[in-house]
View 1: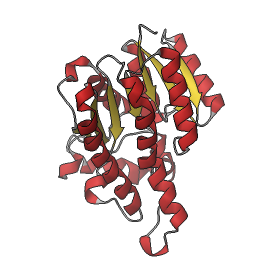
View 2: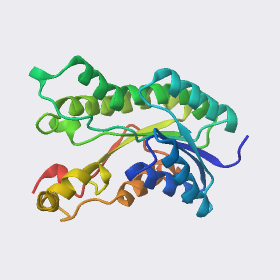
View 3: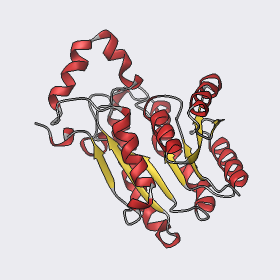
View 4: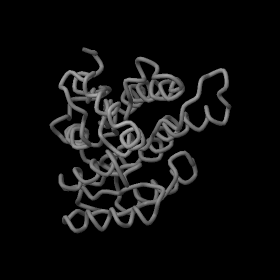
Length: 252
């Protein structure tokens, strides 16, 4: 059994996920980075190893039930426990209005954001029971409350599901001392927004005007909060969602 704390971060090869993996590695965790691009995953592990972080890459699609289950069980058995599961993978998946939305698109977005949390959490629970200050950290969004912008209605719906499953898991797992919380990042400057940043930089820059603190978020703004939620400093916090949006949710 590993003496190190063990963390799994899904969707961890870029953006917020990689920053979270790096921060947990600096906190002393052995971090397992999940992703879809094996070559990128290998590069990221190299970067972390160069910083003295114990890291490994585990490639699987978070929407594939069998792949999620078998890989998480494999990790849990290898280390004898899982201390932290960060369900970071997710995304908009595109935009579509309901009238023209295909069932395939609906299922794709729900699978990416909600099914993935269910599959990964279910598989990790037996190993979290053996963890130290074990917790699950999910990602929701402002869209869970305001139902998203034009064409992002099903994204908002899926994230509302994440908000609810976070609380439901917290209720279900409290008796084992497993805490379950969520973060709700606002507009964070990551590759997620690269297209608008390159094609309409003035629009991208203007987003900061709607944020109380007057700037866009950085991946580090999220990773610091995830680090806190995973730590024993947060040992009496469960079923919470922390907004990381510089006050964006309130509007100005």
